[in-house]
Length: 245
View 1 (cartoon, one colour):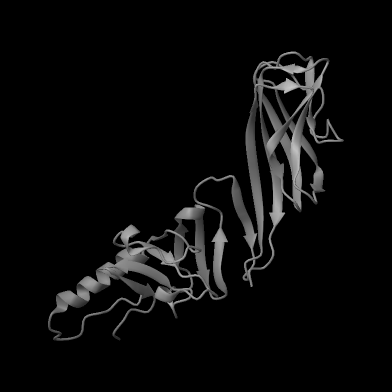
View 2 (spheres, helix red, strand yellow; view 1 turned 30 degrees about the vertical axis):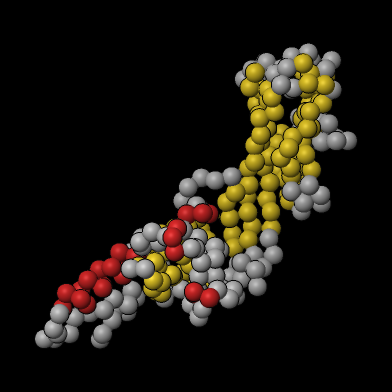
């Protein structure tokens, strides 16, 4: 046997000369693949001047990238001023930096499991062809409230299924007796007559509702007009993506 089965590490032969070369190559390869750390699985080939020794990428499938030609789905490692390619095997785990996601290699492709670091969007299920179900929580601080209503800049995305919009009054809301959280045309969909004092909260759960256009959140004033204060909102929703191929 000239290489190990999984990591393909070179092994020493009987009476081999210059054993240190084979041994060092095995150590370098093991250092790259054990606890594999990928910078990205979607980026094109980075410029050599921006690379650090040992940087690793997963070569995208279905893209013709000159410096990575013929290496689709392999791990590209920048070593000694050139790209070295490693073949992944079933069961290999990798952390992807730009997605804060953990991947596991399977015979059918890479499976994304729950992210290792918290993020505002997590993939909770994914098919072999890349169709994914994502759970997201997006938040925004609406401050210096003014007028009869205020709308968010964040949106419930087109074709998302929304479960809730939660609110917390951060600083006292002025000029009103209460406020509603909802949408244009449904002002209290996520809660009505909400508290204006700092610390007041509401978890505005609804039956899972599909949205077919990007939709902003609206805070509507009750008993007057907004003249100050701030409210943080958090939108909770699911998105279903199509297969990648």
